[in-house]
Length: 228
Image (cartoon, rainbow, N blue to C red; front, side):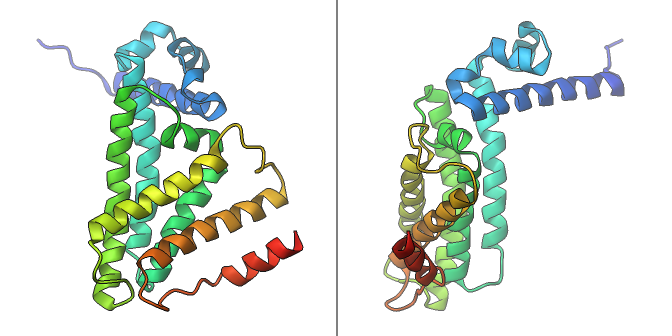
């Protein structure tokens, strides 16, 4: 008779897997991929190193799972925005703004997911992640082209790829561990708000018809800089 796992065993296995992923994510948030050595992850999860390898055959497998889990949350956020009923310009602005703002909440983790040098397996997972993000942006662009809000002469797929590449590239400097510009406190929140607004404005302007995009954030952002 074949052995069948009981519900309690299944729950324990699932719990161990979740503990490993949470420990790895926390370590990456603190020091990037180099911090999440398997022995460190095992210790943080309260498990033996060998137990980690039972769930993830290699460190690369673990890292890819961490990237995929966190990235899917961002895809889901953008999907919800793309599914909205607001005008396309507002949806595109909200999508880019949300991505930038959420990345800046956990700069070290976002930097690891987007730009930190890594193994080829992680780079491949990044491409899958970018494609999923681009699909949501492309949906908004196509809606905008149909309504006349966005330029109809652009290939929607190319436009979405450029927009995603643009806001991710625009984040590399602000997310970098070497960048001390974004500290803690209220002034950091204000700086992040302006950064997210600027990047979203640029992305919207890239596809908008002439005179079709005027940012509601621009006057406040400009005023704030003059006062700084």
